[in-house]
Length: 616
Image (tube, rainbow, N blue to C red):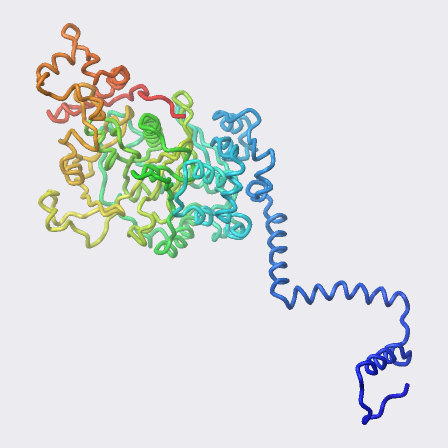
């Protein structure tokens, strides 16, 4: 090949011809066999895209998406079966029940084959309504970014509640949000307790590891091992007085020791003599204490659009269905409280009515009409026992009285007796899974260096040197304020109230135990219940009717029975009066016996029949 001299000027056409000559020169590029050409072609197909993925941002993002797809769809089938948009469109999700939800179905499955029973929330909570709105479900999933990227987080309650924190939405959207979470991601109960006439039956559900940071004999303890240790543990045995007959439990004495929670003692145990449960609990508390100061909020409620009165704040977000009317809410609380105290009675759990529930008890032995939740307290020692033995338990109401299912959820922050970051002021809840209505459970613990403010000492009528017990909301109590607990009836079932309930109510509500009007309601003596002012205007004295004339018209002169006029001219109120009368009469007799210093046992020895409908 003749190359131009260095002095010869190269034109574009000459350069092109020289390049072609160079390519076709067999000395420089010998002819390749067909197989080599094929290999060269395949390499170009592989390496060119590889360079694209390796050296370009778009290529890298595409690889991340592919990796995400593989992880979600291949390694986490349980979540993808339920929560992906494609799954929402499937028949399985749209129609989770063949015939419709049956509240007895889950119980029948459990009893028929407890050894092989696999728990699903859809057996115990009605998910039909949520999945009929499949388009809304899909919209919700996209908007809250549950799919796919948040699935890389741990499959825990705290991970998924990030999606609902602070969301203000409609009732339907909140209903769907909770039901999707229950069906795809919510932890299942550790065991199920079924109340019955002769006691209760316990079913252990989960075989998963409870405490991930505990190694024992080369393996982690199963739930069956733990529950066996719980049943045999002397530390978790109830107070012996709870096994005595009711007449010997009219009063229960508490001690200072009941209100002391020694974390060091719980953590630094003697491993040579401790049982499995104690070792597991020590490891768990060690972890909880380390994270408690910055722990996220454990209990979430719902914020509903245009809910100016904040009614949604009285429902747990997971089980919320709708904001209920007054009657439905009262029905729910009636069954919830009776089931709680029946469960507590049979398991030897010592708790007592507090706050608004105590005020309602003072008036007529029932929850006040406008109250949206209920409150009980217990000593911190009892709270610790309760958390260790019953956390994540599903309690099933005695089938003879209803189909209630109640979930026990204890906040991990219960071990921190300070206010921390103010996210976890409630220690535990007893939650109705049908509606989301709940019972707040708070523990009282000794707090060193805390005393009553000077302006409250006289009003509280306490010994300045007395030890002070607190809940996380800084309500202050002395031992004599609480002990001895007094047995009573609340919502018709045996319960307990603090010793100095009158002083505690005056301290918290000032005129609450004497003022008969509040929030548009009035306590009607004829009916022995709180009714709306506007419904009972005929019982207000005026120019036409004096107080004496009103009382004369309120009762039948011959029989002394309450008349329709005396029941605010309402057939429904008259009917309810006769339903509640057995309970309100017992409460009235009990309060008169207390005032006169007589025994109250004849008024509180037995529970009354249910006075409200079964919630739906």
